[in-house]
Length: 125
Image (cartoon, rainbow, N blue to C red; front, side):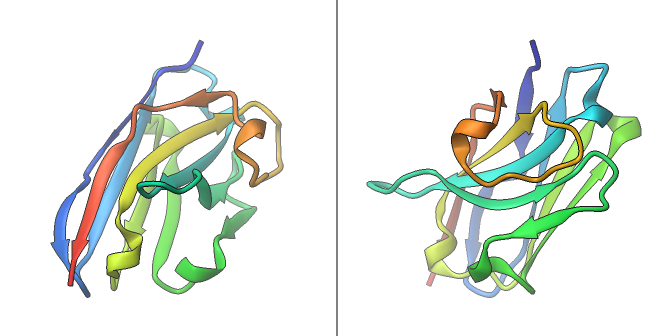
């Protein structure tokens, strides 16, 4: 069992920045692909970014490319999501998730085995 806990959410004005963190309890954290997802009110949970165990494979949702950066520190069991130039449409609950598949980054939510409780990000216009 892997426990994930996100932090770093909050209220920010459009154009501002936030950095989300997700700490994992697993000793085998470095073997997991990690992903960030988000869910806005009334919408489905969507893939935002994902990173393979080594960081060699990284994928982004098209609408966040150039603004968001995913990274990980395996020594700290932590994955980050740096969000710049935030827009009101980025408002959502952000979740981190772990996928036991080794070496790949997959986008569907059902591919991920463990989820954190989420952290709210609100971007005001």
